[in-house]
Amino acid sequence: MTTELSETALAELVCTRLSHDIIGNIGAVSNAVELLEEGDTDFMDDIHSILKTGSEVLSARLKFFRLTFGLSNANLEKIELLQKTAADYLATLGSRNYPIKLDFALTDVKYARCALLAIMVLADTMIRGGSIKVTLVQGRWAVVSEPAVSAPEEKISRIKNILDGKIELDAQFAPLLYLLKYLKQSNINLYVLKSPALGFVFE
Image (cartoon, rainbow, N blue to C red):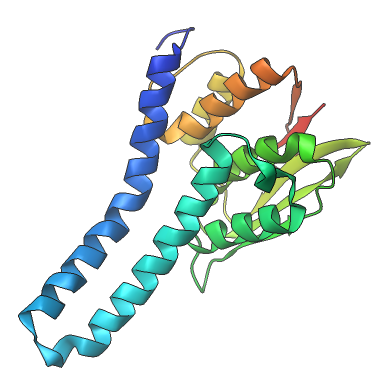
C-alpha cells in the first residue's frame, strides 16, 4: 500500500480493469464463432443467443468506458445520452432477478464524468441489485446507492481507506482512483455520504 499513485500506475490499473470487464464476453463471442465455423447446426440457437448477448454487452460497456475514461467530447454534454449509456452499462451488470436501476436527474454537465465514475464505483458494491440515483442533495449533485444487499465489509473498508488517502494498487478500485485524480485536476470537491447508503457529493 502506498500514499502516492503515478499517472503510469493509474493508467495500468484502468487498462487492467477495463480489459477484465470485457474479456469474458470476448471469449464467449470467440467460442460462438468457432462453433459456427465447425458448422454444427445442433447448437445454432445457442450460438445466436451467445453472439447477440455478447455483442450487446460489449457494445454497452465500451460505450460507457469511452464516455467515462476517454477524451472529453460533445457527448458528455448530452444528458439523455449519458443517462442511456449509464443505464445500458448497469444492465450488463445486474440480472433479471437482481437488476441495478438508475435514476439519472443530472442537469449540470460539469459533473458528467464525475457522475459516470461514481456510478461505476457504486455499482461494484451492489452484489444483488438495487438502485443508483444521480440527484441534488442540499443543492449539490450527488450519486447515491441503495443496494439490495450490502457489499462485503472488507470491500467497503478498502473503499473508505482509499477515500481517506490510502492508495491500493488493485485494478478493482481503478474507477475510484481515477475519480479522485479527476476531481483533483478539475478542482471539484468530494464529500462522502456515510448513511443510510454509500454515496458521493460533488461541489
